[in-house]
Length: 356
Ligand code: H2U
Image 1: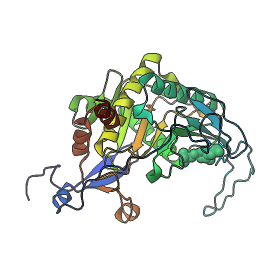
Image 2: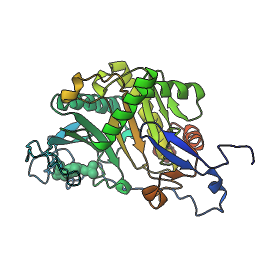
Image 3: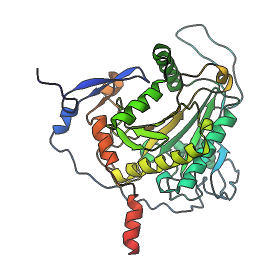
Image 4: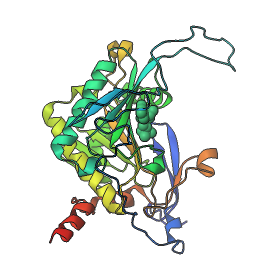
């Protein structure tokens, strides 16, 4: 048996948040080169589009008119997946045909009045305004609902229907699957080790630096040891924080800075507006806010699909669907690639060159 090298040899890694394993096959990267690395197409998104329902002053599908907003703008989703009215109160006891009543509220949040800008291109104070709004919405909706899911679907590849910079907020009367699972795994870790799993993890990653993409006094962004998506990022505060509204002003500013940093690196990787799905996970709210949530640590997941170029994506199919996640590129290799990229956005570099 040859000496094991995790950068060369197949192995499985454990994801303690999901209680599942990922198969890592770095030897597959030695396959003959499959395809050219292509840059992204330049997308000509207008700053203002009179037909876009998310732009300031425009009429949405519901007939409601957006104000002429100049910062962030939040509205109730005109096609909500969750409605406030609860339609049934029956819980069937057949184990094969379970059903339960639910209710909720869905909102859409525009980050900026211009359609042709995304978070990494925004100024730190504009990103901070987004963070403040995320925190406000979590606080308000969290008074009534157990779980407030803030998430951003970015890019057509992730099924995002509108290029205007925006995210969604879905608040629910129940704990969704992903939330319930990370609640369970963090609780089990806390019971066993008497410390928060993700606080321990942030400290170990901050020491090792191997998987770090960006770090500042308050935050660390890593490609997690157990990442499944090629350039997945886990964003963590370095002190114990339960929820977004608990962040103080300096931590929010610092969060804006680290977001601008690694989101710029994301865009620079393939010189394209990097698609992803991201979302925040914090301690449960509503009636669950009074439970002991000390095992919780606020964090954000970034799941980008791109693998090798602006158009070549990873598909989670076949073995992933039927057995377990698998990746070729190691988390360490992906983190180094991102870390070594410039902090200056590629579009501002080409803009400067044009201006010269
Ligand atoms: P995406 O984040 O997937 O692009 O979705 C945009 C949301 O905006 C979507 O949930 C809502 C859609 O229901 N929307 C409105 O509420 N009103 C509109 O007029 C257009 C889009």
